[in-house]
Length: 97
Image (cartoon, rainbow, N blue to C red; front, side, top):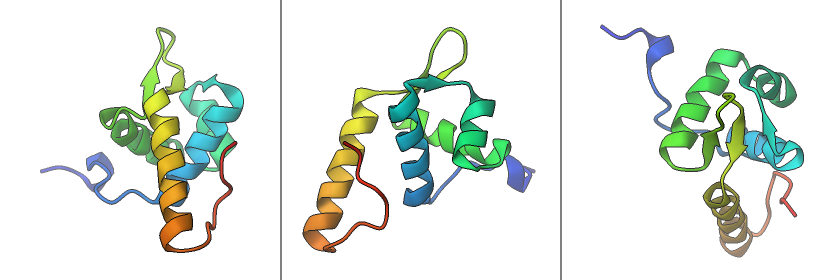
């Protein structure tokens, strides 16, 4: 039987993904511990999000284990912001430049 802590993210919070992407965009790459601190997330929760984001191709890990935002991750984020602006009219999180 799987413990709740081991279960993958099934419905990710877009605002959490936003914080991770913005931080990676600003820093280029970070180790998981620094990324957790920078985003204000618990390490174990961040790891679940990174697993999900990696499966989707939004982030990858370099040879040192640092987290790197992919072009697909940045592009998908931009598309999401555009969709929200078009259909909702406002964005609650800051749009990346």
